[in-house]
Length: 246
Ligand SMILES: NC(=O)c1ccc[n+]([C@@H]2O[C@H](COP(=O)([O-])OP(=O)(O)OC[C@H]3O[C@@H](n4cnc5c(N)ncnc54)[C@H](OP(=O)(O)O)[C@@H]3O)[C@@H](O)[C@H]2O)c1
Image 1: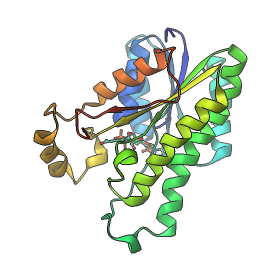
Image 2: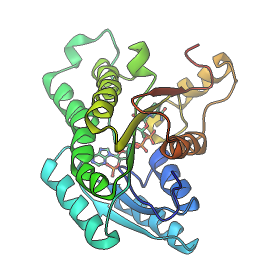
Image 3: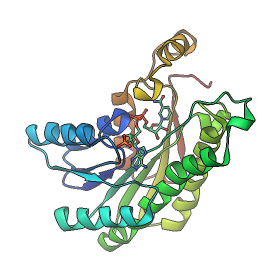
Image 4: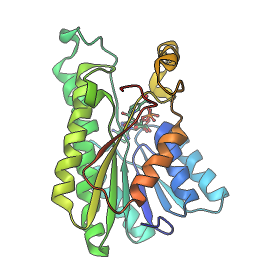
């Protein structure tokens, strides 16, 4: 699929990997709806960067864990751009809890992480699917994580939520075929604010990575865009981790 002139929604599109995806989509000619929940300044900056480079973009506030807010956001995209062809389900949160500290993985933590990381991705896919079906094609990429494969990560509920994202990808690929392709990009460590306060731990990883480098947000963005473009795959969880889990 040629991304030129396609309309894309990137959740959490103003920071980190989401920002890099928004900029790369625009570079490939897509019109980009940059979603945020709290980071309004970052979302506006991303939109301004795209506009200054001659592209089209729009910042939209919505908490992806709230179905009605998601539906309203998609309505706004339809009003502004006329349709939506691409979805990058990037928005997620975590809590840093030692894996063995089961008591700290409270019901509130489970609910909060599942609401955003899993149900939020489902709500967004459900809201955009009718427009993709109407136009006859669409592509979705969910951001998973190697945590979803290994079971290791910033907390147990986070790792399990990412395993659920991998499962959601397969189920949605079945549910939305043949018109809409749904895939998942599962990064290893990527240098973003995700590691705020844990930078040392992140850099300690690098010598142990086969490729001896931490992935950049641009690495992941390139791959997300390539996955959106690729017509022959659906339901795949593709690891991009510099050899971290090999
Ligand atoms: N960095 C890594 O090492 C790594 C590794 C594997 C996977 N990932 C995945 O990569 C994705 C992006 O993470 P990142 O590293 O780029 O960190 P990040 O900058 O913190 O990105 C997370 C984004 O999610 C948005 N978000 C959170 N809750 C939201 C909500 N309820 N509604 C709408 N947006 C919400 C945030 O926007 P607001 O601030 O506006 O809420 C933010 O833009 C996540 O799915 C993460 O799980 C990251």
